[in-house]
Amino acid sequence: MKTKRKIFDLSAISIIACDCLQGVILIFVDLFLVANILKNQSLGQDITYNIIMIGVFYVIYYTALGLSYLYTGYFLKNHNKSIFVSVGAICLTLVVLMIYLLGDQLIVYLPLVAFLYGFSFGFYSSGYHNLTSETISSKHQVRFFAVKRIAFQATYIVFPVAFGFIIDKVNFSIMALIMVVLCVAFVVFSFLIRPKKVYKLSFNIRKFYRYLKNNKQSTEPLKYVYINNFFRGASYDCFTTLITILVWTSLQSNSSLGIMQSIFTLCSLVTMFLYLRYYRKKRAKQFIFPVIILVSLAVIGIICTAGTSLIAIVIFYAVYTILNVILMSISDSRKASMVRILSLHSHILESTALMEFSLATGRVMSSVLIILAGVFDGLVGNGSTIFLLINLGIVCVLYIFYGLSCYWIEKSLIRQDEQFHKIHVNELFEQVED
Image (cartoon, one colour):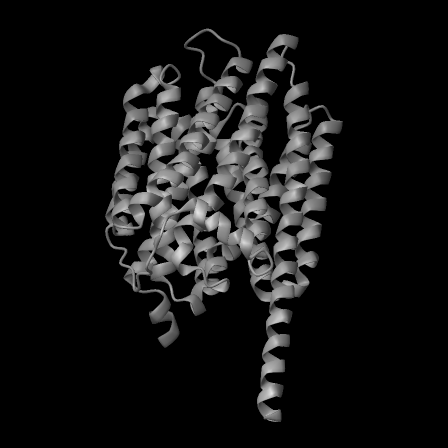
């Protein structure tokens, strides 16, 4: 009990609450805002136009998100990071309010909304990620991030089904208004985070790059984290968008979309329990390889049925949602602990900026693929989805590399541990001889 009090104080609870509430914003945008854009007919366009607009939204959003990390770092090194978390939360609240006020005219101002949304999220996240490492003790980070992931998954159980029924039974505008209220709570929790320690920070990307280049062997795991982030951005977020498009176009129901998300997320908690109980770095392939194999087989099932089988789509949704938490947990814990493992506390801003920029680069690339799929399917006409399915196949290949890069990180850390113990044992042996 004493350990729990040390880990989960008011700041730790507020961090988890902020993580869950920003998850609610992601649910609102990635599921229901996307579905609302898909069904939009205000401009008299077909669904391929709406798919193109979804791709445009994400390209602008992820570009603004990635660039914001490179610029906020210059200010983060001299200012309290909790300020950035609070200001970012306020800006996100204003963006959600803007979505509510625009109503049916949202599609017209979608690029502007995407830019403001990306900038706000970048401002919030740049402070949030760096603040976490200063608030949670290093020896408790694995447990903390596991609990945070479970809480985040619980958010994806409750809110999707609730939001889906509200939109179908009432309307999207009322749902957006409820989101504004939740965002106010988000702002309140952001003001309650207090760091326990503050590292002396710098922000010089060129100098940090030279450091990585001159210390390739000792910083090898960090290189794999950047690679992992790129493939995560190129696959994970795009899969989520493609799932939403496929499910909504098949069912035309927000409540059905929400119910499936909630049920499969509930099942994923069992996966998290098994992961926490049995996972070790040397057992990585026993967890990672089954995930990428089963997700790939589910994608092949959709492609073989030409995207017309609802059963194949639901199976893919289930397999991906239930199993993907394993790769996400590995990525999150390693990304959060890498600076501590490599003793790079003074370079945490540069490291986080490069991590998020590589993530954003992958996201922009996959979002461009969505635009191209919409354009080419629009040229084919007659409700074609052939290029959307090709896009799904490409993203699946990128997802395989995402899983492999998780394994590369674990192997690299094992090699580093073995090298450390080898050197340490030799030093002890020399001391005994003396």
